[in-house]
Amino acid sequence: MWALIGPRIEQSPPSYVFFLRENEKRKDATMVHKKAAFFGKPVENTGEWKDSAQREDAIATELAASGLVDATEVQVAVEGDEARLTGDVYLREEIATAGNIALGVEGITRVRNALKAREHSIQSKGKEADARAQTRTL
Image (cartoon, rainbow, N blue to C red; front, side, top):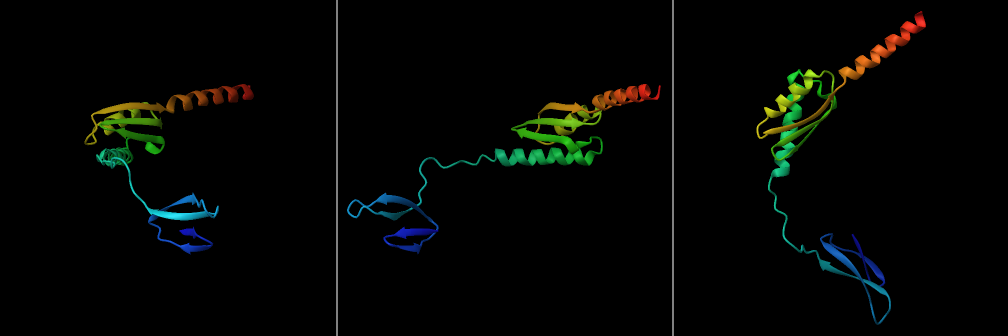
């Protein structure tokens, strides 16, 4: 970090916060430095963020390792003891399976399951494509 002191520039320690003040007599800008200080109550680490991140990781790992759920498009969010699953799975049965897997993770007591099955949309698109193909061949 560099500081302007009078007419020359000098390197200064990075642990200082710099303030610019106007010199009344010379009408030129000078840089003064003051040791950095923290004001207010220190942040308390409750460990909740760490626990939530660990639970999210555990749920995602269990979903991927189970082989019962295609979890490539599943997002997991944990707040406290509640997990929220969002995204898409291939089959409707995978929705309930994913919820049960999430409930099996230590510290999770509730699951909000907002997963959607792609099965229905793929089948309906397939039927539309078959109908179009049939009209073309007739």
